[in-house]
Length: 171
Length: 216
Image 1 (tube, helix red, strand yellow):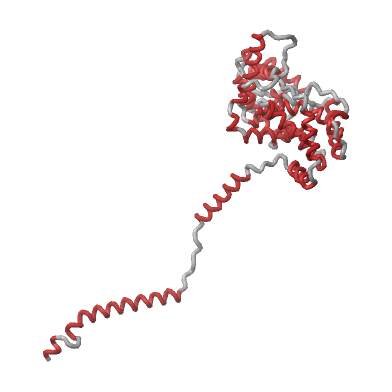
Image 2 (image 1 turned 90 degrees about the vertical axis):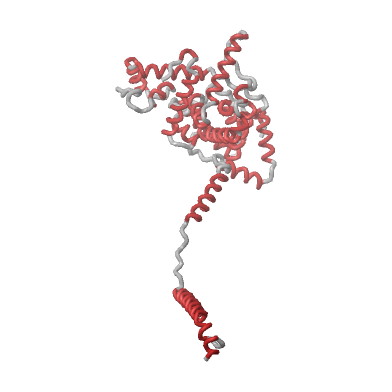
């Protein structure tokens, strides 16, 4: 089995990582060992990764409290003595362990804002104006204009032709 | 339920393996069998599961949150949730994958909720007793060098983004494969690969000064 150089094929050297973790198949491991003899880049990568793993290996471990089990069993006993409804509620929430309600608040807020923005940006529906109403309003305006014009005319003519004017008196 | 009545089961020295050797397969099947017995009301089996996985779960949580008390508290919550879920348990996935899925979500939630309050405080303090790796009594100088190195490794791990940290810890210390990590983190296998590569690259560059580590 021959392999394409993991460092040169443009992809992340997945096979090298699996090799360092001991997760390659026997055939892959043999092919990689042959390749590592020839390829300096891959050899350096594997050396660096193995060094890192040995450093991480030395990472300290926590000594667990001797009363860990006792405290756990106490909590279990306490839960068992709770009312059945509460136990069912706990069981229900345990089923949804990976789900957290916290992100729901910002998501809901974002949805509300989005709806508000869409509502504000939405063009108002075009309302067909009532033609009769328009006509009536137009007629009214015309009447007003005509009335005003008539009044102006009367004002201009008024002193000359109106009753009690000097010309009529003189006649 | 009485802890004193639980059968004595020796804690495995390492994590439960997921490779194809027969012992590991038997162990995995045994876990599922134990959990099914817990579902049927056998609390002794719960004690067996606790003894088998308590260590690996708490170590994982400790490395995730880097706080002893919090790790133990979250560890208790993990096993409480396992017990609460017993009635609805279905062996659709490996038991350890399910267990670490619970542990990962609890740890990630805790990290998210305590991001601002936590800061760097917990990384710098000596946090409870840790198992020594020295075979014999170390000198004070050795102890100091070791402590400083551990602190640097803890800091390097702690500086990784939470998802990358979880992926590295499950890959390195729990020997979980990509599919199991993907299931625990609820993401795709390619996302896990990407998380692992970026995490290891960061760790290699941060810890490069140890033993003249070459950086890619």
